[in-house]
Length: 489
Image (cartoon, rainbow, N blue to C red):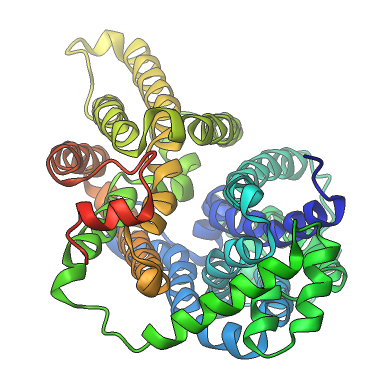
Protein backbone atom coordinates (compact mmCIF):
# COMPACT_ATOMS: atom_id res chain seq x y z
CA UNK A 1 0.00 0.00 0.00
CA UNK A 2 1.31 3.43 -0.94
CA UNK A 3 2.22 5.61 2.05
CA UNK A 4 0.72 9.11 2.12
CA UNK A 5 3.50 11.73 1.57
CA UNK A 6 1.86 14.20 3.97
CA UNK A 7 1.85 11.53 6.70
CA UNK A 8 5.56 10.90 6.15
CA UNK A 9 6.25 14.64 6.34
CA UNK A 10 4.35 14.95 9.63
CA UNK A 11 6.19 11.96 11.12
CA UNK A 12 9.56 13.36 10.07
CA UNK A 13 8.81 16.79 11.55
CA UNK A 14 7.75 15.24 14.87
CA UNK A 15 10.79 12.96 14.80
CA UNK A 16 13.01 16.04 14.39
CA UNK A 17 12.31 16.60 18.08
CA UNK A 18 13.88 13.20 18.64
CA UNK A 19 16.90 14.14 16.55
CA UNK A 20 17.43 17.21 18.75
CA UNK A 21 16.99 14.94 21.77
CA UNK A 22 19.90 12.78 20.56
CA UNK A 23 21.99 15.77 19.47
CA UNK A 24 21.66 17.53 22.83
CA UNK A 25 22.51 14.30 24.65
CA UNK A 26 25.83 13.72 22.88
CA UNK A 27 27.15 17.16 21.92
CA UNK A 28 28.53 18.01 25.38
CA UNK A 29 31.17 15.27 25.10
CA UNK A 30 33.21 17.12 22.46
CA UNK A 31 33.16 20.37 24.41
CA UNK A 32 34.30 18.94 27.73
CA UNK A 33 38.02 19.74 27.40
CA UNK A 34 37.36 23.42 26.67
CA UNK A 35 34.73 23.68 29.40
CA UNK A 36 37.10 22.18 31.95
CA UNK A 37 39.83 24.62 30.93
CA UNK A 38 37.59 27.71 30.88
CA UNK A 39 35.96 27.07 34.25
CA UNK A 40 38.98 25.50 35.93
CA UNK A 41 37.58 21.99 36.49
CA UNK A 42 40.76 19.98 37.03
CA UNK A 43 40.64 16.28 36.11
CA UNK A 44 43.03 15.61 39.00
CA UNK A 45 40.68 16.66 41.79
CA UNK A 46 37.37 15.33 43.05
CA UNK A 47 36.04 18.90 43.14
CA UNK A 48 36.88 19.48 39.46
CA UNK A 49 35.28 16.23 38.40
CA UNK A 50 32.26 16.90 40.63
CA UNK A 51 31.69 20.29 39.00
CA UNK A 52 32.05 18.91 35.50
CA UNK A 53 29.83 15.91 36.28
CA UNK A 54 27.18 18.31 37.57
CA UNK A 55 27.52 20.45 34.42
CA UNK A 56 26.69 17.43 32.28
CA UNK A 57 24.05 16.05 34.66
CA UNK A 58 22.25 19.44 34.85
CA UNK A 59 20.67 18.64 31.49
CA UNK A 60 19.50 15.27 32.82
CA UNK A 61 17.88 16.93 35.84
CA UNK A 62 15.91 19.00 33.34
CA UNK A 63 15.14 15.83 31.38
CA UNK A 64 13.58 14.15 34.43
CA UNK A 65 11.38 17.19 35.10
CA UNK A 66 10.50 17.59 31.44
CA UNK A 67 9.32 13.99 31.16
CA UNK A 68 7.46 14.26 34.47
CA UNK A 69 5.53 17.47 33.82
CA UNK A 70 4.94 17.50 30.05
CA UNK A 71 1.88 15.25 30.27
CA UNK A 72 -0.69 17.67 31.69
CA UNK A 73 0.03 20.64 29.37
CA UNK A 74 0.12 18.24 26.42
CA UNK A 75 -3.35 17.00 27.33
CA UNK A 76 -4.69 20.50 28.01
CA UNK A 77 -3.25 22.47 25.09
CA UNK A 78 -2.53 19.77 22.51
CA UNK A 79 0.60 18.18 21.05
CA UNK A 80 1.33 20.84 18.43
CA UNK A 81 1.62 23.83 20.83
CA UNK A 82 3.98 21.80 23.00
CA UNK A 83 6.18 21.20 19.93
CA UNK A 84 6.54 24.97 19.61
CA UNK A 85 7.51 25.23 23.28
CA UNK A 86 10.05 22.40 22.97
CA UNK A 87 11.56 24.00 19.86
CA UNK A 88 11.93 27.32 21.70
CA UNK A 89 13.58 25.60 24.65
CA UNK A 90 16.07 24.00 22.25
CA UNK A 91 16.72 27.45 20.70
CA UNK A 92 17.28 29.09 24.10
CA UNK A 93 19.55 26.20 25.14
CA UNK A 94 21.70 26.58 22.02
CA UNK A 95 22.02 30.36 22.41
CA UNK A 96 22.52 30.14 26.17
CA UNK A 97 25.34 27.60 25.85
CA UNK A 98 27.01 29.51 23.02
CA UNK A 99 26.96 32.83 24.90
CA UNK A 100 27.26 31.60 28.50
CA UNK A 101 28.95 34.35 30.53
CA UNK A 102 29.65 32.16 33.58
CA UNK A 103 29.21 28.63 34.87
CA UNK A 104 25.72 29.29 36.24
CA UNK A 105 24.39 30.57 32.93
CA UNK A 106 25.79 27.45 31.23
CA UNK A 107 24.03 25.27 33.82
CA UNK A 108 20.76 27.13 33.26
CA UNK A 109 20.99 26.70 29.48
CA UNK A 110 21.79 23.01 29.78
CA UNK A 111 18.86 22.59 32.19
CA UNK A 112 16.44 24.20 29.72
CA UNK A 113 17.74 21.92 26.99
CA UNK A 114 17.11 18.99 29.32
CA UNK A 115 13.49 20.08 29.79
CA UNK A 116 13.11 19.95 26.00
CA UNK A 117 14.75 16.51 25.79
CA UNK A 118 12.48 15.10 28.50
CA UNK A 119 9.39 16.56 26.86
CA UNK A 120 10.41 15.36 23.40
CA UNK A 121 11.01 11.81 24.66
CA UNK A 122 7.33 11.68 25.61
CA UNK A 123 5.51 13.87 23.07
CA UNK A 124 7.25 13.00 19.78
CA UNK A 125 6.50 9.24 19.72
CA UNK A 126 3.05 9.92 21.22
CA UNK A 127 2.14 12.31 18.40
CA UNK A 128 3.27 9.92 15.66
CA UNK A 129 1.43 6.97 17.25
CA UNK A 130 -1.78 9.01 17.43
CA UNK A 131 -1.49 10.25 13.85
CA UNK A 132 -0.38 7.07 12.07
CA UNK A 133 -2.74 4.39 10.68
CA UNK A 134 -2.55 1.13 12.64
CA UNK A 135 -0.71 -0.81 9.91
CA UNK A 136 2.08 1.80 9.77
CA UNK A 137 2.29 2.80 13.43
CA UNK A 138 5.25 0.64 14.43
CA UNK A 139 7.45 1.68 11.54
CA UNK A 140 6.58 5.37 11.84
CA UNK A 141 7.11 5.51 15.61
CA UNK A 142 10.48 3.80 15.03
CA UNK A 143 11.53 6.89 13.06
CA UNK A 144 11.78 8.73 16.39
CA UNK A 145 14.26 6.22 17.82
CA UNK A 146 16.29 6.26 14.61
CA UNK A 147 16.35 10.05 14.71
CA UNK A 148 17.57 10.02 18.32
CA UNK A 149 20.49 7.85 17.27
CA UNK A 150 21.02 9.94 14.13
CA UNK A 151 21.10 13.06 16.32
CA UNK A 152 23.82 11.46 18.45
CA UNK A 153 25.84 10.67 15.32
CA UNK A 154 25.42 14.20 13.92
CA UNK A 155 26.53 15.70 17.25
CA UNK A 156 29.68 13.57 17.30
CA UNK A 157 30.39 14.38 13.66
CA UNK A 158 29.88 18.12 14.13
CA UNK A 159 32.16 18.05 17.19
CA UNK A 160 34.89 16.41 15.10
CA UNK A 161 34.53 18.93 12.24
CA UNK A 162 34.30 22.00 14.48
CA UNK A 163 37.29 20.93 16.56
CA UNK A 164 39.35 20.63 13.37
CA UNK A 165 38.22 24.07 12.21
CA UNK A 166 38.98 25.50 15.64
CA UNK A 167 42.49 24.03 15.65
CA UNK A 168 43.06 25.61 12.24
CA UNK A 169 41.81 28.98 13.47
CA UNK A 170 38.94 29.00 10.97
CA UNK A 171 36.04 29.57 13.38
CA UNK A 172 34.93 33.22 13.80
CA UNK A 173 35.43 34.56 17.32
CA UNK A 174 34.01 38.10 16.93
CA UNK A 175 30.50 36.95 17.92
CA UNK A 176 31.73 36.38 21.48
CA UNK A 177 33.82 39.53 21.89
CA UNK A 178 31.33 41.15 24.30
CA UNK A 179 31.71 38.33 26.86
CA UNK A 180 34.11 38.65 29.84
CA UNK A 181 37.68 37.64 29.05
CA UNK A 182 37.56 35.22 31.98
CA UNK A 183 35.24 32.94 29.97
CA UNK A 184 37.04 33.41 26.65
CA UNK A 185 40.70 32.92 27.49
CA UNK A 186 42.52 30.02 29.11
CA UNK A 187 45.52 31.15 31.14
CA UNK A 188 48.87 30.33 29.54
CA UNK A 189 51.66 28.38 31.21
CA UNK A 190 54.47 30.18 33.10
CA UNK A 191 53.20 33.67 32.36
CA UNK A 192 52.49 33.01 28.70
CA UNK A 193 49.67 34.92 27.03
CA UNK A 194 46.18 33.46 27.48
CA UNK A 195 44.67 31.36 24.68
CA UNK A 196 41.32 32.32 23.15
CA UNK A 197 38.97 29.31 23.35
CA UNK A 198 35.56 29.46 21.63
CA UNK A 199 35.36 26.08 19.83
CA UNK A 200 33.17 24.63 22.57
CA UNK A 201 30.70 27.49 22.11
CA UNK A 202 30.32 26.62 18.42
CA UNK A 203 29.88 22.93 19.30
CA UNK A 204 27.02 23.65 21.70
CA UNK A 205 25.56 26.53 19.69
CA UNK A 206 25.32 24.72 16.34
CA UNK A 207 22.15 23.09 17.69
CA UNK A 208 20.45 26.40 16.90
CA UNK A 209 20.13 25.42 13.21
CA UNK A 210 17.98 22.27 13.60
CA UNK A 211 16.11 23.91 16.50
CA UNK A 212 14.94 26.81 14.35
CA UNK A 213 14.12 24.39 11.52
CA UNK A 214 12.01 22.32 13.93
CA UNK A 215 10.12 25.43 15.07
CA UNK A 216 9.34 26.53 11.51
CA UNK A 217 8.25 23.09 10.28
CA UNK A 218 5.76 22.63 13.13
CA UNK A 219 3.60 25.29 11.40
CA UNK A 220 2.98 22.77 8.60
CA UNK A 221 1.73 19.80 10.64
CA UNK A 222 -1.77 19.24 12.08
CA UNK A 223 -2.85 18.70 15.65
CA UNK A 224 -3.15 15.09 16.80
CA UNK A 225 -6.57 13.77 15.69
CA UNK A 226 -6.85 11.81 18.94
CA UNK A 227 -6.48 15.01 20.96
CA UNK A 228 -9.00 16.76 18.71
CA UNK A 229 -11.56 14.00 19.28
CA UNK A 230 -10.94 14.08 23.03
CA UNK A 231 -11.79 17.79 22.95
CA UNK A 232 -14.94 17.43 20.87
CA UNK A 233 -13.44 18.62 17.56
CA UNK A 234 -14.45 15.56 15.55
CA UNK A 235 -14.81 17.29 12.13
CA UNK A 236 -11.20 18.55 12.33
CA UNK A 237 -10.01 15.10 13.38
CA UNK A 238 -11.85 13.46 10.48
CA UNK A 239 -10.27 15.94 8.05
CA UNK A 240 -6.82 15.09 9.44
CA UNK A 241 -7.45 11.34 9.14
CA UNK A 242 -8.41 11.84 5.51
CA UNK A 243 -5.42 14.08 4.79
CA UNK A 244 -2.88 11.56 6.13
CA UNK A 245 -4.53 8.73 4.16
CA UNK A 246 -6.08 6.77 7.03
CA UNK A 247 -8.13 3.83 5.64
CA UNK A 248 -11.83 4.06 6.57
CA UNK A 249 -11.42 7.38 8.42
CA UNK A 250 -15.03 7.45 9.67
CA UNK A 251 -14.66 3.98 11.17
CA UNK A 252 -11.36 4.93 12.84
CA UNK A 253 -12.99 8.06 14.26
CA UNK A 254 -15.74 5.95 15.86
CA UNK A 255 -13.17 3.49 17.27
CA UNK A 256 -11.20 6.31 18.87
CA UNK A 257 -14.35 7.79 20.39
CA UNK A 258 -15.21 4.39 21.90
CA UNK A 259 -11.68 3.79 23.21
CA UNK A 260 -11.58 7.23 24.81
CA UNK A 261 -14.80 6.43 26.62
CA UNK A 262 -13.24 3.21 27.98
CA UNK A 263 -10.11 5.07 29.11
CA UNK A 264 -12.20 7.75 30.82
CA UNK A 265 -14.11 5.13 32.80
CA UNK A 266 -10.88 3.56 34.14
CA UNK A 267 -8.67 6.63 34.39
CA UNK A 268 -8.97 6.90 38.19
CA UNK A 269 -7.97 3.29 38.84
CA UNK A 270 -4.95 3.17 41.21
CA UNK A 271 -1.70 2.26 39.47
CA UNK A 272 0.39 0.83 42.32
CA UNK A 273 -1.76 -2.23 42.98
CA UNK A 274 -0.78 -5.84 43.62
CA UNK A 275 -2.12 -7.01 40.25
CA UNK A 276 0.25 -4.61 38.45
CA UNK A 277 3.27 -5.57 40.59
CA UNK A 278 4.90 -7.74 37.89
CA UNK A 279 4.72 -5.26 34.97
CA UNK A 280 5.85 -2.46 37.31
CA UNK A 281 8.85 -4.57 38.38
CA UNK A 282 9.69 -5.47 34.77
CA UNK A 283 9.41 -1.83 33.62
CA UNK A 284 11.67 -0.73 36.48
CA UNK A 285 14.24 -3.42 35.70
CA UNK A 286 14.39 -2.96 31.93
CA UNK A 287 14.67 0.84 32.30
CA UNK A 288 17.25 0.58 35.09
CA UNK A 289 19.52 -1.91 33.34
CA UNK A 290 19.34 0.18 30.16
CA UNK A 291 21.27 2.85 32.08
CA UNK A 292 23.24 0.53 34.38
CA UNK A 293 24.91 -0.69 31.18
CA UNK A 294 26.61 2.72 31.27
CA UNK A 295 25.27 3.92 27.91
CA UNK A 296 24.59 7.57 28.76
CA UNK A 297 27.83 7.98 30.68
CA UNK A 298 29.74 6.49 27.74
CA UNK A 299 27.87 8.65 25.20
CA UNK A 300 28.50 11.83 27.18
CA UNK A 301 32.13 11.06 27.96
CA UNK A 302 33.16 9.07 24.87
CA UNK A 303 35.94 11.51 23.82
CA UNK A 304 37.18 11.62 27.43
CA UNK A 305 37.30 7.83 27.63
CA UNK A 306 39.24 7.59 24.38
CA UNK A 307 41.68 10.23 25.70
CA UNK A 308 42.05 8.19 28.91
CA UNK A 309 43.36 5.44 26.63
CA UNK A 310 45.95 7.79 25.12
CA UNK A 311 44.22 9.28 22.05
CA UNK A 312 44.69 12.92 21.07
CA UNK A 313 41.68 15.25 21.18
CA UNK A 314 41.03 15.10 17.42
CA UNK A 315 41.63 11.35 17.29
CA UNK A 316 39.26 10.85 20.26
CA UNK A 317 36.55 12.86 18.49
CA UNK A 318 37.02 10.80 15.30
CA UNK A 319 36.76 7.57 17.29
CA UNK A 320 33.54 8.98 18.81
CA UNK A 321 32.16 9.43 15.27
CA UNK A 322 32.87 5.72 14.60
CA UNK A 323 31.08 4.98 17.86
CA UNK A 324 28.01 6.95 16.76
CA UNK A 325 28.00 5.40 13.27
CA UNK A 326 27.95 1.87 14.66
CA UNK A 327 25.22 2.93 17.09
CA UNK A 328 23.06 4.10 14.19
CA UNK A 329 23.67 1.00 12.04
CA UNK A 330 23.00 -1.51 14.81
CA UNK A 331 19.90 0.33 16.01
CA UNK A 332 18.43 -0.29 12.55
CA UNK A 333 19.53 -3.94 12.76
CA UNK A 334 17.88 -4.26 16.18
CA UNK A 335 14.59 -2.93 14.82
CA UNK A 336 14.70 -5.52 12.07
CA UNK A 337 15.51 -8.35 14.49
CA UNK A 338 13.19 -7.55 17.39
CA UNK A 339 10.12 -9.23 15.88
CA UNK A 340 12.14 -12.16 14.51
CA UNK A 341 14.32 -13.11 17.48
CA UNK A 342 12.14 -11.73 20.28
CA UNK A 343 12.73 -9.25 23.06
CA UNK A 344 14.03 -11.69 25.68
CA UNK A 345 16.57 -13.34 23.39
CA UNK A 346 17.98 -9.97 22.29
CA UNK A 347 18.34 -8.88 25.93
CA UNK A 348 20.14 -12.13 26.83
CA UNK A 349 22.53 -11.88 23.86
CA UNK A 350 23.12 -8.22 24.64
CA UNK A 351 23.80 -8.86 28.34
CA UNK A 352 26.43 -11.49 27.56
CA UNK A 353 28.11 -9.42 24.86
CA UNK A 354 28.09 -6.21 26.92
CA UNK A 355 29.66 -7.99 29.89
CA UNK A 356 32.63 -9.11 27.80
CA UNK A 357 33.04 -5.71 26.10
CA UNK A 358 32.93 -3.77 29.38
CA UNK A 359 35.51 -6.10 30.94
CA UNK A 360 37.80 -5.52 27.93
CA UNK A 361 37.45 -1.73 28.29
CA UNK A 362 38.11 -1.98 32.03
CA UNK A 363 41.30 -3.98 31.38
CA UNK A 364 42.37 -1.45 28.75
CA UNK A 365 41.96 1.42 31.23
CA UNK A 366 43.61 -0.38 34.15
CA UNK A 367 47.31 -0.30 34.99
CA UNK A 368 50.09 -1.37 32.63
CA UNK A 369 49.59 -4.66 30.88
CA UNK A 370 53.32 -5.37 30.84
CA UNK A 371 55.70 -5.42 33.79
CA UNK A 372 58.58 -4.38 31.52
CA UNK A 373 58.90 -0.56 31.48
CA UNK A 374 60.72 -0.80 28.16
CA UNK A 375 57.49 -1.93 26.58
CA UNK A 376 55.53 1.08 27.86
CA UNK A 377 54.87 2.50 24.37
CA UNK A 378 53.62 -0.83 23.02
CA UNK A 379 51.63 -1.29 26.22
CA UNK A 380 49.91 2.08 25.74
CA UNK A 381 49.09 1.29 22.10
CA UNK A 382 47.60 -2.06 23.10
CA UNK A 383 45.47 -0.42 25.80
CA UNK A 384 44.19 2.08 23.24
CA UNK A 385 43.21 -0.74 20.88
CA UNK A 386 41.46 -2.63 23.68
CA UNK A 387 39.43 0.44 24.65
CA UNK A 388 38.53 1.35 21.07
CA UNK A 389 37.65 -2.22 20.10
CA UNK A 390 35.77 -2.82 23.34
CA UNK A 391 33.67 0.33 23.04
CA UNK A 392 32.87 -0.10 19.35
CA UNK A 393 31.73 -3.66 20.00
CA UNK A 394 29.91 -2.49 23.13
CA UNK A 395 27.75 0.01 21.24
CA UNK A 396 26.87 -2.63 18.63
CA UNK A 397 25.64 -5.04 21.31
CA UNK A 398 23.78 -2.29 23.17
CA UNK A 399 22.08 -0.80 20.09
CA UNK A 400 20.48 -4.03 18.86
CA UNK A 401 19.56 -5.30 22.35
CA UNK A 402 18.65 -2.98 25.20
CA UNK A 403 18.60 0.11 22.98
CA UNK A 404 16.04 -1.46 20.64
CA UNK A 405 14.00 -3.33 23.27
CA UNK A 406 13.40 -0.91 26.17
CA UNK A 407 10.53 1.23 24.88
CA UNK A 408 8.88 -1.62 22.95
CA UNK A 409 8.87 -3.90 25.99
CA UNK A 410 7.56 -1.26 28.40
CA UNK A 411 4.70 -0.41 26.02
CA UNK A 412 3.67 -4.10 25.79
CA UNK A 413 3.58 -5.24 29.41
CA UNK A 414 0.94 -2.81 30.74
CA UNK A 415 -2.81 -3.02 30.04
CA UNK A 416 -4.37 -0.20 28.02
CA UNK A 417 -5.98 1.37 31.07
CA UNK A 418 -2.63 2.04 32.80
CA UNK A 419 -0.23 1.99 29.86
CA UNK A 420 0.39 5.74 29.96
CA UNK A 421 1.33 5.64 33.62
CA UNK A 422 3.47 2.56 33.03
CA UNK A 423 5.40 4.28 30.26
CA UNK A 424 5.84 7.34 32.47
CA UNK A 425 7.27 5.11 35.21
CA UNK A 426 9.71 3.52 32.76
CA UNK A 427 10.77 6.90 31.37
CA UNK A 428 11.29 8.41 34.84
CA UNK A 429 13.33 5.41 35.98
CA UNK A 430 15.48 5.65 32.85
CA UNK A 431 16.24 9.36 33.28
CA UNK A 432 16.85 9.22 37.03
CA UNK A 433 19.48 6.50 36.58
CA UNK A 434 20.95 8.43 33.63
CA UNK A 435 21.40 11.52 35.83
CA UNK A 436 22.95 9.58 38.72
CA UNK A 437 25.41 7.63 36.57
CA UNK A 438 26.37 10.60 34.38
CA UNK A 439 27.06 12.73 37.45
CA UNK A 440 29.04 10.02 39.26
CA UNK A 441 31.13 8.76 36.33
CA UNK A 442 33.88 11.45 36.20
CA UNK A 443 34.19 11.51 40.00
CA UNK A 444 34.70 7.74 40.23
CA UNK A 445 36.89 7.56 37.10
CA UNK A 446 39.16 10.26 38.56
CA UNK A 447 40.42 7.81 41.20
CA UNK A 448 40.09 4.55 39.25
CA UNK A 449 39.45 4.79 35.51
CA UNK A 450 38.50 1.14 35.10
CA UNK A 451 36.14 0.91 38.12
CA UNK A 452 32.97 2.21 36.37
CA UNK A 453 33.36 -0.34 33.58
CA UNK A 454 33.77 -3.27 35.97
CA UNK A 455 30.63 -2.05 37.78
CA UNK A 456 28.68 -1.85 34.49
CA UNK A 457 29.89 -5.35 33.58
CA UNK A 458 28.64 -6.70 36.93
CA UNK A 459 25.24 -5.09 36.26
CA UNK A 460 25.05 -6.84 32.90
CA UNK A 461 25.68 -10.21 34.58
CA UNK A 462 22.82 -9.40 36.96
CA UNK A 463 20.62 -8.36 34.03
CA UNK A 464 21.29 -11.68 32.25
CA UNK A 465 20.19 -13.64 35.33
CA UNK A 466 17.04 -11.59 35.94
CA UNK A 467 15.98 -11.54 32.27
CA UNK A 468 16.50 -15.31 32.07
CA UNK A 469 14.51 -15.98 35.26
CA UNK A 470 11.79 -13.30 35.26
CA UNK A 471 11.14 -11.78 31.84
CA UNK A 472 8.36 -13.28 29.71
CA UNK A 473 8.76 -13.25 25.93
CA UNK A 474 6.27 -10.88 24.26
CA UNK A 475 7.12 -11.55 20.61
CA UNK A 476 4.05 -12.64 18.67
CA UNK A 477 1.87 -12.59 21.80
CA UNK A 478 -1.31 -10.52 21.96
CA UNK A 479 -1.60 -7.86 24.64
CA UNK A 480 -4.40 -9.88 26.27
CA UNK A 481 -2.20 -13.00 26.44
CA UNK A 482 0.68 -10.95 27.90
CA UNK A 483 -1.65 -9.74 30.64
CA UNK A 484 -2.60 -13.35 31.44
CA UNK A 485 1.10 -14.33 31.57
CA UNK A 486 1.68 -11.56 34.10
CA UNK A 487 -1.35 -12.55 36.17
CA UNK A 488 -3.39 -9.45 35.35
CA UNK A 489 -7.13 -10.03 35.17
